[in-house]
Picture (cartoon, rainbow, N blue to C red):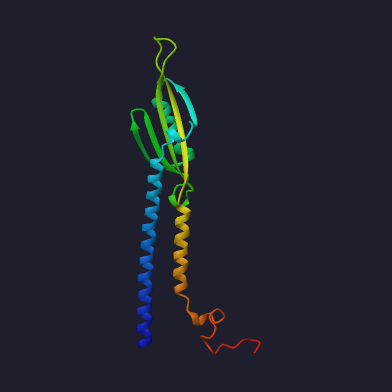
Length: 179
């Protein structure tokens, strides 16, 4: 009976430790993802990069909507869209559908500005500029840390008596085939 109680106590301790590790890994994942989003939002790609695309158009709203749809369908998974000025739009996304599988965080900035038309009677022409910048996601760092934690926890579950070749001297009743 004392062995059974000791076994149950050990199992309960291991279950509590495993649950605590799972909570810690989840909290660490949330921290890394929010850090990636903050770093991506803080990037000023208007001063740090050259325009990736330039468009001259009479209807900037339609052009910006078309660009946003192209980016959404083909290049990135959207996370957040916001405006920082009258004619400046920012889009933050990631390269994969899920943060844990995406290698990059992407920030697209679209600006629209009026250019002077050649004649006074013509409609104003708008120049739409698109700036794109990528930063490496910390998802792989998180996955590495999580796997190390899980493997470390698995090492705690190893019973030394079952591995006599790695832990010699624990069991004397083991006989080798050559003896």
